[in-house]
Image 1 (tube, rainbow, N blue to C red):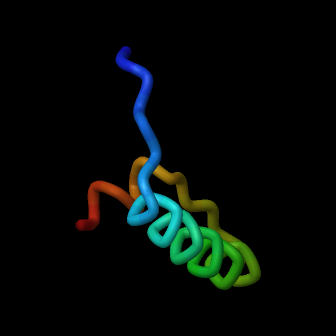
Image 2: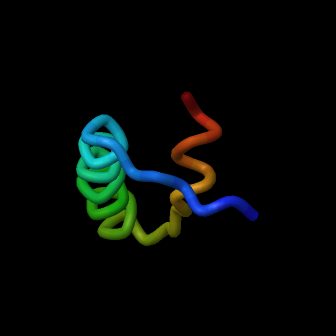
Length: 40
């Protein structure tokens, strides 16, 4: 697979992902980065 060059936008999305994952994790279910991206 190609190496992805991370952009500022990717970093913002990663922050959203981490925030969302933290709330989901507290609710007791797991979420992956891939699922987060698929949602968009």
